[in-house]
Image 1: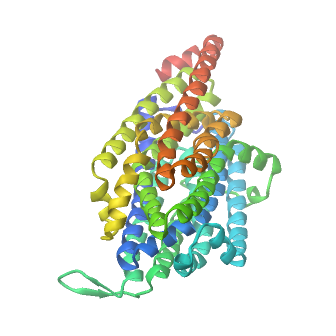
Image 2: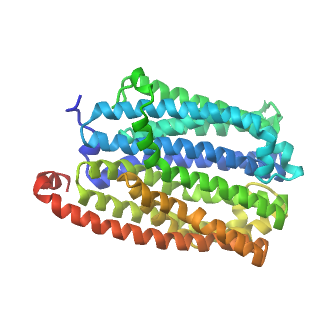
Image 3: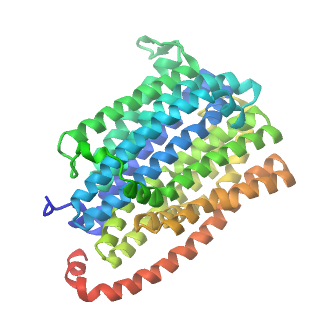
Length: 473
């Protein structure tokens, strides 16, 4: 088995990035589209308070996402490097530990979420108007996170082996299922002109049930693939036994992804409470819409970075430092193009985009002003995301953690308090582009410093790896 060739060892960097990043990008765009469409159905079927309710529940989902990404990305980084080192048995052990750890966390948070439901919703910034909507939604979603967490971590494992298409298909299955199930569960009927389909008329609870069912379907597909024997790494029950050395390394490498997502959760909680104080329930709904729009615009960046992680990790493990730099350059340019396109579309068409979610005039008018301010320097975010991903890929936890914290924790949260105190509601929106700019500057400093290190390592490794470098180039 050690002689088995892996795609990461046989493809040129440009082709490999496309093969790994394109499926990841498509899959993540479908997932973002699901959130996008889900919000549309809730906005149209429940109203502005429904949109506000899912914004209130969102921090809990982000915490689950944070844990799952920490385990999946951290473990995936180790797996890519172990495969690069030809240590397949170790990679399979890491995979088993990822599965057992993420399932245990999913069950734990489902239990805790139900016990502390009311307190969590108040903490997350719920107003009395929003509370019952948010509770109806979150009391169901807590169970979906068991499946969602497993799927997210497993997809990172699958992608780290070079099976990007399988990870894409699993996310497509889940996302598309949710899009089709939403109207059936939310509305009393679906009018297709030629005929009418009866719905379950469950409102916002229906959106939650549709999410649970779609994620179960996705997990069934992933599990079938892993157990089919078609995976590059094989599943062994013995590898489910926790190895705390593996778990510690996984958490250390994945801590950057964890901090990024948890900081997003903390940010949303702070924002909801500031918006409640300086605005109203409509302001919380506006942020919910902005969050969906910017997530959809930025999702290609995260898909691209997901494709970049195993390439950089494998080449770093194989001591092909020039290939790490080459993949960084190609990925950075590609991500910057996508972030610029997102910036242009959101600046030019904010009213048209917001009106997709709701006919509420206040939501559209106030939201369009907020969108233009929030995305003012969105074109820089592509570079920032890829730069942070570099340090995850090569196993340097400290800079990766710092850069993941920079936008939301180091810059945005302090700026939110400062600018809201100075300028009220408009100050909240102004804080976003300033934080993006400062975070991009910090990322640039670390990335260019790391490039110097890679140059030095390349020079030192040329005599040992000259034949491999020629083959790769």
